[in-house]
Length: 227
Image: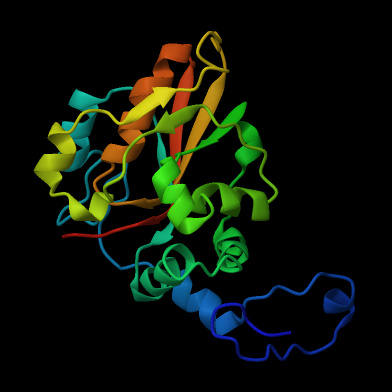
């Protein structure tokens, strides 16, 4: 078997344990590199590196004031150099097999939530990429998800400044099949690929809060660091 990330042959010693378990298509070297997290103090909410440990960082204070619907935020790993390369290959080179690699990096109990909702991509972006990068990882991880939002957003978030992101009109809307649902007492997890400023997932939460969820949390595959 070859590693899906570096394509080297994975050499694994045969033992009673490995004999009855499914081989993972990710070598130990790549797993360690992709899971690397930068050392330092963190925001207790979004996991941003901060100069002094804080329950809530300055960025989170701004987001909470604008979009108070999000409760907790979870991330699998930092947006390190290896993750950056993986995401480039996965999203822009269309290396769909890397959805399996991302799924292997996720250690999270999705079953705690009544609903898991991937952040949508626009029809134009879907045509360009041929798949929603977040939904594909959910499928690879065996996670049942529900599409609740649509978007007409075409510009990539990386093309916008932080001020432009904050001042932009919310690009998300409820899909017709969920618009009249009342999900009082239910919990939902919003899933996305990269948490940069956090505005995307908070805007998504601001729209689905109209479904009366009791709790809205966020999970992303990686978190950029900008200290």
